[in-house]
Length: 104
Image 1: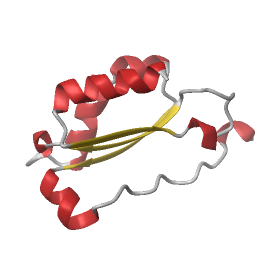
Image 2 (image 1 turned 135 degrees about the vertical axis):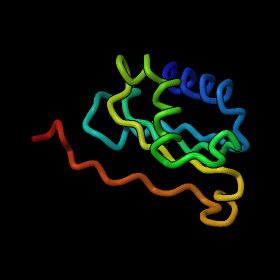
Image 3 (image 1 turned 135 degrees about the horizontal axis):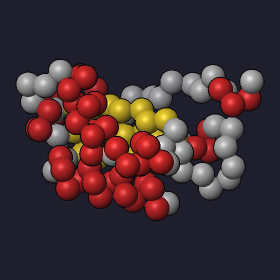
Image 4 (image 1 turned 90 degrees about the vertical axis):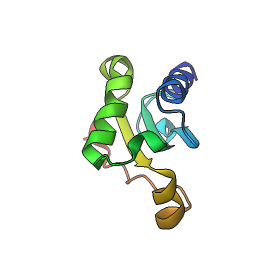
């Protein structure tokens, strides 16, 4: 759970989120038990106001650059302002199903 804690700490420090959920979804993939390689992040922050989706994802990727370079194989990002979160979703979107890349 070390990588998950690093992700959470970095995102909390940088984005002061109203809501943050970091889920380790590695168990849904063809990786050894206890792996921390596949994550889903749902992040609600006013820092995202006026920014396009690509800008939001780049900002998160920049903060997690070390983890992405060394530890994370897949990162699903769901980034919202507080207003978007309340009006559009109100719940966490589902991650796409894995196509089993390493199984082939």
